[in-house]
Length: 412
Ligand code: ASP
Ligand code: MG
View (cartoon, rainbow, N blue to C red):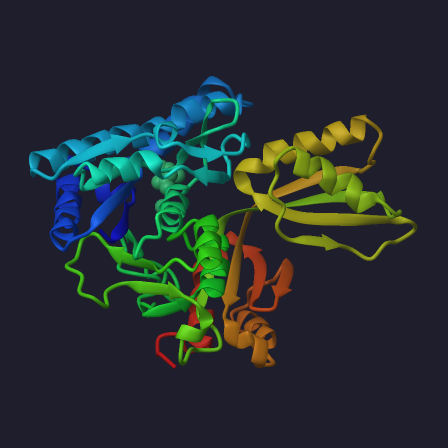
């Protein structure tokens, strides 16, 4: 039997009624002749609640116990989905990550998948089971502890299963009907894309377009998994949603494919550090060890042998970053006058593979922001994106004006 992977996000399994609706979709694919692997998220809001419990109990928590707690939301939905399918006379059973087993590294709270053993599930399919319902987001470490794959990790579980089982497709059911040029809540001119290149999706995902976890797109690109994002609240035909695919499968596209933003960004400045060989290593080494995901970095021009170093990181890692820097200062590895955290910023980015062959895209972005009176605090660029940090109060305005300036409401 051909295999299909269907992943349901938190909003698609938020209530028993929605689980029933999702199960009906699964039942239809079984009737279409597929063996289905269903990957479920926790009910929406559930993981946040569990994370909250952990943080309240232990601010600098043991990540192994964090994983033990936050992975549990998926166990509930996996069991409920299997029960719902059984009630519909579809042979189904649930699998937690360790039962598959889905093996990961021991990097708790952000583990990477090392291996999915397909034997157990394949054997059950051979015995007549039609649906394997797998708890997303979780796996087991070499030490035998439960791990999780980082927030949004169920997407990655889904793509990894699609690759491991050679699935015909990996359908990601979510609360939006596809990938948009930007967040439709910010501008009504946002347009659904029929197709988007893996590389563009990778940038958009990592820039905070929350529709897919970045790692899932990396995996899909590496294993060439046909990845479709579609709504669990609509009737979908063959061409519904957005297909994330390789560049060659996209005939024509705008220079800029999308505008992304992230509120989740903090700007940290180490004021007056010594400008000497090794200073960047002395700063970013300890940050990396502390698990801080540094994104943008700016080093100022030095004056009298001292300079300011600015970087951005997710807001919820500010405390970790501060501790790493203060500890390094105490160990005498760095010496700074002050550490200033600005959590009132956001990152806005434009992304498109067309930028490779078009000049003047960044300049147009900057002049658009200038015309709106928006001050840019930090800039970074890559081959297919330009990102800026701006005051958070300008986020909507920045996104809207860039969406207009690059004409994203119309297809190319
Ligand atoms: N439930 C987890 C989260 O909210 C994993 C997922 O849904 O992808 O991050
Ligand atoms: Mg998600």
